[in-house]
Image 1 (cartoon, rainbow, N blue to C red):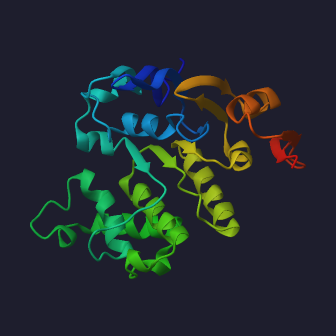
Image 2 (cartoon, rainbow, N blue to C red; image 1 turned 90 degrees about the horizontal axis):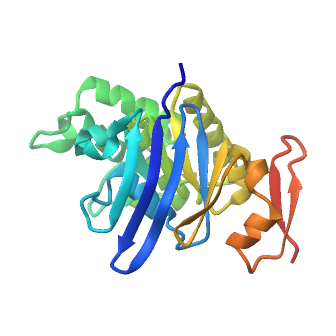
Length: 270
């Protein structure tokens, strides 16, 4: 029996007035898969992620298409259910008031029905605390737990943000340039952590302007330009000179192979 994809997006179209941001985008993500969403600035990558995650209300004019989670209509999920299904992390996390890294990660537990009292940050239970500790350790930021997030570097805040989406326990992780400020050591270690999650049945949709990193991590790539789907498939099949020049016409590039994995690697000629 063929298993349903964890996420299926069919004919997703988003318009703002007369401007089309996404037009009939279609793709699937299966358990254990990492899909890289690639394209130039303004191609609709963040709009796609935020629409699927429910951060852009489906009821707004100009939205059409279908989104399924394990065969169920994801757009029919209430906000709490949806947050337990899809976790979105943007390029940075911030707070308008003092908040420690631990408190920021605790907020990821609200969708599980805790943290609803008058004193928000003191109304979580022991299970929430265990999940937060696990998430901080998995995201390599346990030592930052008592630091105010306003005092952290951009890369450190990204680690804390990653811990928050792990604490959310959603099976779909949407990472929108969420590794862009990490140093090489953290990118390597976080990549291994994401592979562990994939082995457990999670799925990841990754936006990255680092095409070589995406090529190394991704099982599938989806290429977008001006809201239109240019190509989708395995990195070796879609990261070609023709397709990359279609996305980035001003870039003079050469495509080689990774010496160990054989995945496509992109080099600027000058």
